[in-house]
Length: 254
Image 1 (cartoon, rainbow, N blue to C red):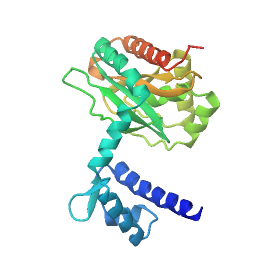
Image 2 (cartoon, one colour):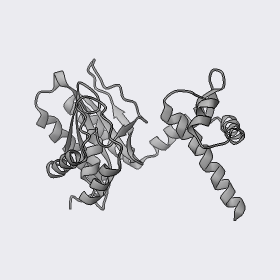
Image 3 (cartoon, one colour):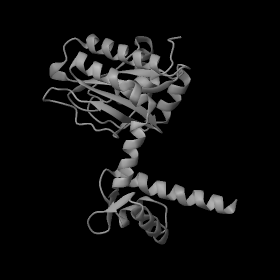
């Protein structure tokens, strides 16, 4: 039993180092990792050496590390095996064709949402997001849509728990205002984000539900302000797509 516990602790420390590198969005040096973690230097160096040997991190520059090719390959395999991603793919393509705009599929991961699929707009001006990007619940249409599909008390508790820094001049950060937005999204069946996460971009999102009516994730369509004309056209289109995918995932609409 002791050996099992020790192995779990070592695995957890390795995951911690990988998460620090992933969240940083840039290569981290050994000094960076030592300052950002609670690990002793000998332990940290052993973990880095082990991760590097397995191809999960790779050195770049002097004593700096980024995620390795093997980890990227594993992530792509996990995405390709995602039932939600596979089931949603045709509907995401259809939504892009109907609206002409960039479409995202996102799922929750702790206190953030993560894009697991993206269908690009064919227009010249596009969203600069990528699959794997972590985005906030409170400032995005996918996040607010997901929250709107939770029981009200559960959504309110999550909003209270989240850090909510302003990302643009339009970001709504007050808890009660966010709860009101989520409540409105619950009534309408879609959430709207007005330049709260990225200036010049308006997004419409709707939740994807499972057979228990619990949210699995959310779909969004992102529109540059200068191309936004009939807002309800986008809202209705994304709502219809989310309902279609929900039916594929077992949701009956009750």
